[in-house]
Image (cartoon, rainbow over all chains, first blue to last red; front, side, top):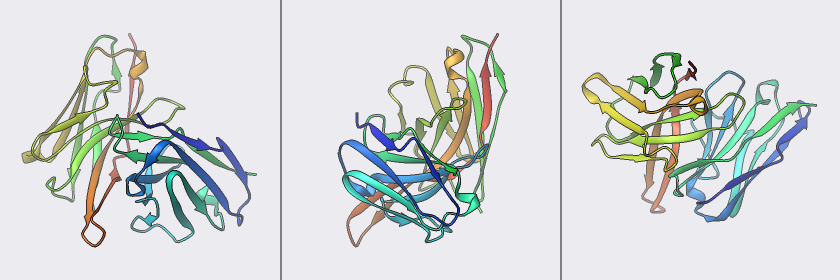
Length: 109
Length: 126
């Protein structure tokens, strides 16, 4: 089983700043199998990034993903009020077939 | 626009079977996998399993002995049954479309969940 570890657990930032979230896999994985989701309080997760760096339909270019091997990063530029949420990385191909990281909460400083 | 809507009882007694339905609208159920994810209160996401159009399933090993996912394509409906529930099964349950995209230029597959229902809260309590 490949474990995904997200850091930090909580990130405090101010609107207009950038935020960098990390997702580390316990084994090297294909970047095409990595996705990122945003979950606002009381809402379902929303797909942001797939294939480690491809933005999903309708996602603004303030959201960018990168990484390979065991370390993947989600960067949010120019934070807006609606960006304060919990972010999850997700991996396909391990056992179970889909696994999620434990999440990073981005909160207003 | 693709929409998924979960429904089912909000309260289930311990040892009984949790049964949920997800209605899919705005899309054909062909060419995608359809599955379930759950989230206990205040915790993270746990993938439960999925089913393809042909009826093949893949389940989380931690739940495999208790879970059944089925598809009724004539009614655009996805179902989840989870047997012998305990308080640990209390969660918001989401249905989601599982996309598997092949890019010919790079011969790469991409796997992600691109459409989610709003979720339904299920509590297990006597």
